Each structure stands twice: as C-alpha cells, then as structure tokens.
Amino acid sequence: MLTAPQLRSLKGTRPITWITAYDVVQAQVAEEAAIDVILVGDSLGMTTLGYESTIPVTLDDMLRHAAMVRRGAPHTMMIVDLPYLTYYNKDIALASAGRIMQQTLANGVKLEGGQAILPVVDALIQEKIPVIGHLGLTPQSVHTMGGYKVQAKSSSAIEELVQDAQALSEHGVSAIVLEGIPDRVAAYVTAHIEAPTIGIGAGPDVDGQVLVFHDCLGLSSSLPKFARPFADIRHAMIAGLQSYRDSVINRTFPQDAESYHLPDSEWEKFIQ
Ligand code: KIV
Ligand code: NA
Image 1 (tube, rainbow, N blue to C red):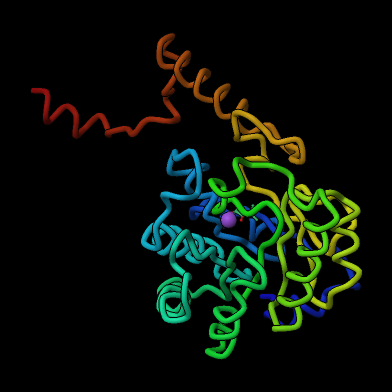
Image 2: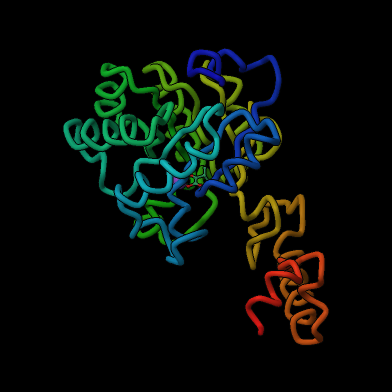
C-alpha cells in the first residue's frame, strides 16, 4: 500500500493512477487492477445516492461507504472526501476527519479549496492526517460558481489558482486534484509545485489522473467531455439481465446441473 510520503515522491517518476469507488465490489476490482489510490469521492451523491449534486452528501454517508470500500480494498491507499460543510473551521474539520480516519481506516482526506482553507489544512496535518487538495472546478461550490463550468480561464483566475496550488503544496498536502481547468494551466501548475497534481478534465500534463468509477467503466448514462469509458459495463449488465429474463421465460434456466437432487430411496419413503 502506497503511503502519503510515497505518493508525494512519485511525482516525476511515473504517472499516478486514481479511481473513485463507493462500495465493496468496486473497491475489490480497483485493488485487483492495481490502481494506486482509491478515492471515496463525495461524487457518491450522484453515482450512488441519486442526488443531482454533492451538496446533500453527509459525513455519515461518507463514513458508511468509505468503510465498505476499505473492507473491499484493505491493501490500497484510500482517500476520503470531506463532504459539504464538514470542514468550515479547524475544530469541525478535525472532528470530521478524525471520524473518517478512525472509523474507516482511511489514509487521508480530501478538501476543496485553496488559500482560504490553509488554517484547516495546517490543523489536519498538525494532527497527522494526510491532506489532499482539490482546486479548479470544485463541485461543492456549484451554487457560487453558477454551475459546473471550466475554471481558471482568465489571467487573474489562473494567477489565483497557481497561488492556491503553491500554498497548498508548501503547507504539505500529499497531492492536489485539479478538476475542470484548461490543459496548459494544469501543466503550468504541475511544473511549479512540489506536490503531485492529479487531473480530471485537466489534460495530459499532470502527475496522475483520476476518473469517477462509473464514467471510467461505462456505467454512467451520460459522460462529461473529459471522461473516456474504458469498458461498456452498463450495456453488459443490461444484456446479462435480458438473457436471464429470457431464460426464465423460455424455461432454459435452471437446468439439471443447476438444481439440487434427492436420492430415489428418500423420495420413495416420502411419497408412499
Ligand atoms: O468526488 C469525486 O469523485 C472527486 C473526484 C472527481 C476528484 O472529487
Ligand atoms: Na469530490
């Protein structure tokens, strides 16, 4: 299992692979595929809980699902998102992150934000909790951003993003997720900070990539521009269920080899 210092020192050696997961089976397959880091993202809200955003996701939701993921992937570095309004000051953040670390055996937590949350980042690291940053398109800010829009598109916004990334890196985060920003901005940030950058919708010139499990494997019903489906699981599942349904209706399932049998002698005793 990768440690937080190892994650940070992977920068410049080889690309780092992250995937999200929300339950035991997803965690098992991520671990079997030798993914470096599993992120229990608050995208849980959309992928699994059926919400339209990450805003309704609670700390209890994250605790329950992260514990499932840990049981499925005991040997993979697991980072858990601090959900909306669970880290707005140092005390709240320590209480939230403390529960995640102790109840799910996570290896660290991820928070959205830059210079504004440095006191919180410091407090967590002070208490030996590895922290991952998240900059650019930060979904918990959907209302103040005015929707899910590509960020860092003006020179002043780029300047602010670079300063946020530098500050987080200097304060000791183990990595920074860069979401929904132009490729050359992500490349510039990556070249100017010590912490590894993990991109999603941030182009190729970052230190690693992360995708939402459902987007990566073709389970989602629709896909953002940046996501490539590396499998077609939704259609495979539908085809499998249609085949099962057909086999039941035309009585080809179950067959003899799929049934339990009783010896004739016992049956005779019963039937007479
Ligand atoms: O919640 C999530 O899945 C995330 C990733 C998209 C980085 O934060
Ligand atoms: Na998230």
